[in-house]
Amino acid sequence: MPGTIFASDLDNTLLFSWKHAVEGDLCVEFLNGAPQGYLTGEAPSYLERIMRHALFVPVTSRSVEQYLRIQFPHRCRPRYAVAANGALLLTDGKIDPAWREEFTQAVAPWQDALQAALEALSALPQGKRCRIVDGMFAFAACDNPQDALALSGALEGVTPLQVSVTGRKVYLFPPPVNKGAAVQKLRRRLQADRVICAGDSVIDVPMLQQADVAILPDAALLEGAQSSAQVVCAPPGRFYDFVLQEALRRVSPQPCPNQTG
Image (cartoon, rainbow, N blue to C red; front, side, top):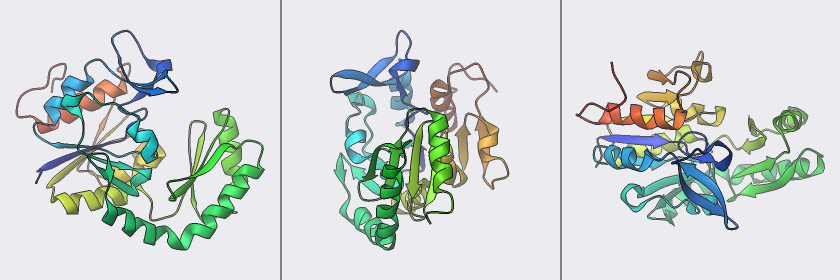
């Protein structure tokens, strides 16, 4: 069993879109034949070295289908991944039935609320591509962040679900579906002594609060929250590089290049 788990969000933490890619970055995801998701050019090497000392587990709000689009290089391909914001565990790309059943039962009392939320999202003009993700939470994409904030404001007080906004995306989560609960389950299941977590958004806060070491882009993300050691990225570095450098620094007995102190 691993002594340390490195549990990391993907989008905008390790993975980024073509809009943010620069020369030397590695495309690891295609959508309808077009480049979609990238890792930095150094990411595979960092992940490979991290995985010598810790278990790398992506923890993402992506659906299973969206997660499986990612083509990690073989040398840094994670065995485990948590999708649907914690509700589904994948082992070698296959859904863990016991984990799924536990969350299916936990979400069952919230199914009427999810259906009502989906109807509300679909009825509002800002909501685009509205759907329920893997049976676990509701989602809508908007044209811009302003529309996403307007959409979430329209749902305030209307739904018992947790409404979260990241950029132009709106999520509605039943209380059991959160990354913090997933990290707690991972720690117990894998009998890990320590968990290092990285994330960039409000959706990642429950996970970061469970971390022994939390890696984040802005201290305000965990302002006022109870958590262990926090490592905050200082500009102008790329957060994707910073995450891997800091994770390696904390799991490897050897000094990490490009980092001092």
